[in-house]
Picture (spheres, rainbow, N blue to C red):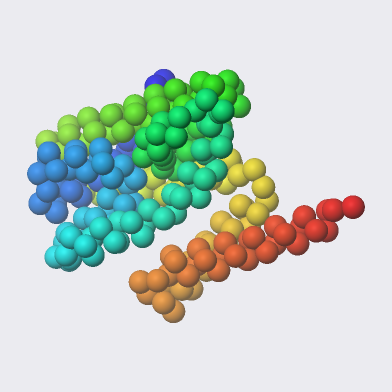
Length: 226
């Protein structure tokens, strides 16, 4: 729980300050906004949901858009679960903890798991993920009440801290060079596909950049093999 009050946790809180203002401008009530933080959790997925609300999309289209934006979390779950699983870990515990998987909790967990005994990692992650969610629910509720007094420029600036943090933290916590290659390719291909394939730019950049990084990884391993 104490790990939630680290620098990454505080940066995440600052991003939710901007989200609270966005939700209020959209017309959501404070209860709806706080509930969204609890059940959706990942910030980009909530922004996608608000975009679907503003465009008057159907509930099925909104659900599909949120699910599609959250597919990026699946590799994080696949990487994190083996770090927590022991022969005595019950599957329902891992299913429950997977709800808390987002970039901030994932990066913090991978950084600190090396100092946590394997049989205590599920407890550690439950405290970390649960406290991150609870903190942001409280912050969103408070900021929602005073959002009118916060300058729009300040809200936007705080909101943009999150992608900046994601990039730097993922770069620093990468265990293999292929992750760096994927990020560089993504940064370079993103603007290109934004012009060529608007609406599918992130998907195209991620798919091509990820496949290219994987190919580079296989090539590097083959060269390093005796």
